[in-house]
Length: 468
Image 1 (tube, rainbow, N blue to C red):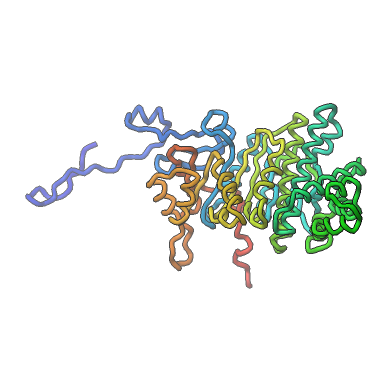
Image 2: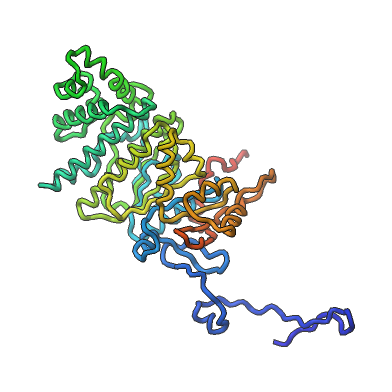
């Protein structure tokens, strides 16, 4: 190419040789290196759900936590998604859901408080169950698909499944009691709940036990219950168990009446690509009702996964927990109990997404023990997807991952500016930093297809209405 001369050929005239911009070509790395041997890769992998291009090198980026686990890039398949409202946390999570379902996984949304995943699950050909008064019900003591698995099992396998169901039921009963009471329960109360549940289960061979059944057994009293309560008379027993009986009574007769005191109408559809328990009908209820519904949904979804494992027909599961801390902040001890509910007999094969706006959500938990356990839950995730956030958020974030000065500057540059100019898009919309371990993060910009734009819209309630 012959340089084009610029300036004037006189002293101080700025005479210089200029080069016209070359034609831009796009090609594979091997082809480009033949033309320009100094091209280098960022070291990213293209295997996985396509998210977009590396913001610095324009390489295509893919993410598949299961593949990253198989190749040794991560030690677990947990994904933590954090960023300001408006950056598209739901969008990138839904893109991952669609892609992983395409890879053969089953999507499970155990407790969709806002109902924002229902349209996507419908589009995937899955099942959406809407929980609430006058809608579908979810019995906290329902064994779910594990009931059929238990009926078909024999020998030690039957005993193992029965113990799994019992342990999850007791953990959930304890959690619901803690939510209603607003405080942890005593060891005696825990033993009373277990004995009452066993008595009800022994009578109900073919149908699932209900919370009113457990309440009735507790109120009447039995030899095993009076022995645990260490009482000598009926009046003494009633005084000892009064608080526990009244607590369970609020689940059946108080503000939660009609939600957790009926048989389940929710059913798992074998082979379904996606399943969602939509709790949006309860969004206007108090936090106790929402927290209880979320815990019940998590337990039921865990039973779906365990049942698939026991029958040998397992499809790997991708699971999303949004608004996670709304359930855990209601009462002390729920972090530990939720972990027990969802992890009992849980095998590998689950890709989990936990979505939050801020690590301040962890600090809102009732006790320091809960906060420490929650931070541990966050730090154990093998992959972090970080969107734009303010500088003050980075101090908490550095407690669960390392951030270079460049990464921190990138994240804060995507944060919403403190201005009042309207009509401007969030500067971090669709921009994310993917972090894993001590590696340098991968900045990627997600571009949605027109179909995704419609399906992933979380602001439909505020769309401009036609006022003509």
